[in-house]
Amino acid sequence: MGLKLFNTMGREMQEFVPINKGEAFVYACGPTVYNYAHIGNLRTYIFEDILRRVLEFSGYKIKHVMNVTDVGHLTDDADSGEDKMEKSARETGRTVWDIAKFYTDAFFSDIESLNIEKPEIVCRATDHVGDMIDLIKKLEDKGYTYVSGGNVYFSIDKFADYGKMALLDRQNLQAGSRIEVDSNKRNPHDFVLWFTKSKFENHAMLWDSPWGKGYPGWHIECSAMSMKYLGESFDIHCGGIDHINVHHTNEIAQSEAASGKKWVNYWLHGEFLVMNKSKMAKSAGNFITLSTLKEKGYDPLDYRYFCLSGHYRSQLQFSFESLDAARTARVNLVDRVKALNAEALGAVSDKLSDKGTLYLEDFKSGIEDDLNCPKALAVFWTMLKDQNLEAGEKLSLSLMFDKVTGLELSVKKDEKEEIEELDDNIRRLIDEREEARKSKDFARSDSIRSELKMLGIEIKDTPDGTVWKKL
Ligand code: AMP
Ligand code: ZN
Image (cartoon, rainbow, N blue to C red; front, side):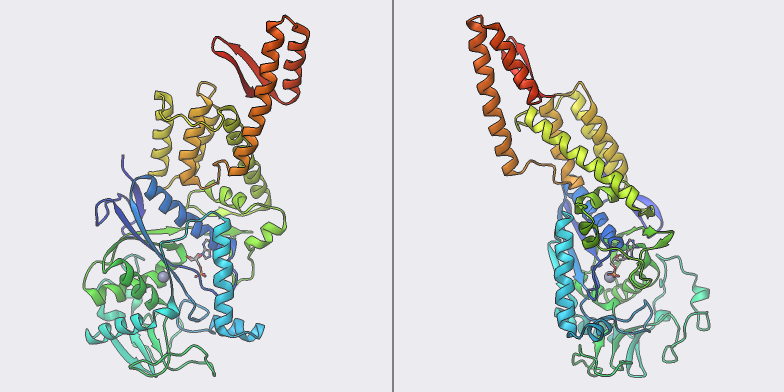
């Protein structure tokens, strides 16, 4: 069985077939850096990290691009509202550039502590305004744009497939439907590609353009940057489920209108983290950050484990009780793998038995079934609890599985030294016991066995000598 993914475009499970054999090109919408990411946002980045790890596990070479939205954009998905970056700057007395830098650093520190692999390319919108202008010019040349009230708009009526992924009804996309009407728009669903008329005075982030000094709309940045680094057509685009209707719908329209080609083959969307029955959201003020969890004594990987316990396409209900359960499970997992390391002296079995191979296949079939992490975790635990599997093989499988789960189970250098030191002590006691037995000093031999037991070590005499394991 190969990798199967649920494609939002068409709403069906599909086998993953990349454009270039053996390679997977992935684009993920990145953070808006005017505030800390909340743990809901981080759930989406954990899902995307699992996606890339599964692709790697399945043997694909990855090129993963993520943008950082450091151009302020407006407070809602439509083109209205207040600029978030400017608002934050005003409230904190810092410049918009300081705000963007501060929260970009905070975001990367968060994802590092969650053991999220950094995408191959991280690109800031402010470094790519020229690419966005070029793309808007292309759309203008092809007749997809109009200028009204000083801003450049994309005309959705010119793009026949508008709203296909979101299953939007074309009838309801006609002017007059009940969304906030911007009198500059020909159709209320048209969206801004370039603003020259900011609603706010002293807008700090401005660039020259053929349409006047201004700044780009939000959607255009993802189209411009993804096509720059991944080409006009690429494999996978992902983000949170809230982006389906507007942001990704608009990205598709402008990208395909510009290139005349199908832009993305697979669309993956992560469901929300919810708290007290409503979506965790910055704007609603009901959000928790990773720093809060750390202050409360949680390891960021407890939260990672918590996220793995739900499927990315299901809502996940956050509560501290559930996070506590995840912490207990993760600590148990870490302890078990540590014990396996001690028992097998860190030596992983190179070859898997038939049983071990079955576990590997089960694990693979879980993750390849649209990244089914709850199933993969269940296989992980069953394997660990299997009494008939050697420690070395369990260790080997655990480390393989952790390439996907990313729970940092491999033994760190200082822990390895600790194991080696423990081993030296135990070996010395076992040798002493051997000597005592040879000289028929059974009292001494028994007392060494008890001493080892006190250290939590059980010994067994085998034809090949004395072996030990942790109790
Ligand atoms: P933003 O920084 O607001 O653009 O959001 C970053 C990512 O987090 C986007 O992919 C959003 O779809 C996603 N997101 C926002 N709220 C939640 C939530 N409550 N649960 C999961 N993902 C979310
Ligand atoms: Zn995007």
